[in-house]
Length: 103
Image (cartoon, rainbow, N blue to C red; front, side, top):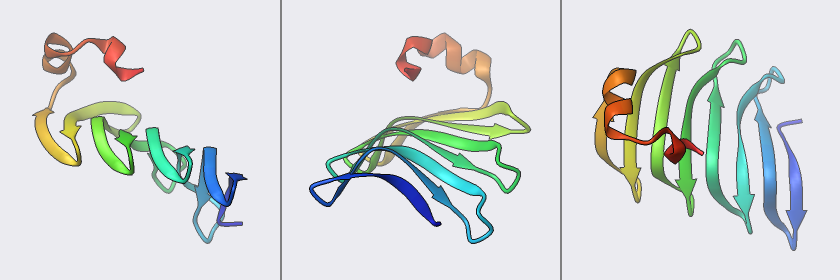
């Protein structure tokens, strides 16, 4: 199985999971009427989250958080798929952003 999720009117909807040929998870996220929206999670070969991004209408729109060894190492802010800001440490990210924006 390469992916699993639900369809409504032949369009992906709700939460989906995507797998490699070795059956390990590679990404997961939400669709609304066949369009990627909300948080999408991307996994490394060990099944740990490598990065996660907020999407709107199939484009990065919001935050992307990059992890290494399960620790946040970088954050970026996107608007309509264009990077508008980047932080390389959590303290500077926290100073400039509300953690409520990550919901």
